[in-house]
Image (cartoon, helix red, strand yellow):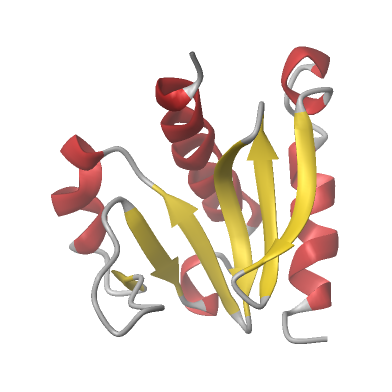
Length: 113
C-alpha cells in the first residue's frame, strides 16, 4: 500500500472515543494516493505515505504551522489551503493523534451544510 497501514489502525481505534453521532457519519475513502476519513462527505484527516494529513480551519493555521512536526500540504507542489501534513513525531502518542482528529473534525463541521 502507498500509505502507513499501522497509522490507519491507530486512526480507526482513535475514532472510537468519539460519540456514535460522529462515528456513524465517518467514511474511509482512498484519495491522494492514500486514505482519507470523511465526516458527512467532508475530509477530516487522512494518510499520505507516512504523514498524517489534516484539514484545519484557516484561523488556526498560523498556530498549527508553528509546530515543528507540521508542514503545509504541498501535494501539487504548491501549499494547499487549510491542509497540513504532520510527520510521525507529531502523532507519536494517542493524545496527539486525538488533537489532530479534533482539528480535522472541526474543519469538516464548518463545511457541512
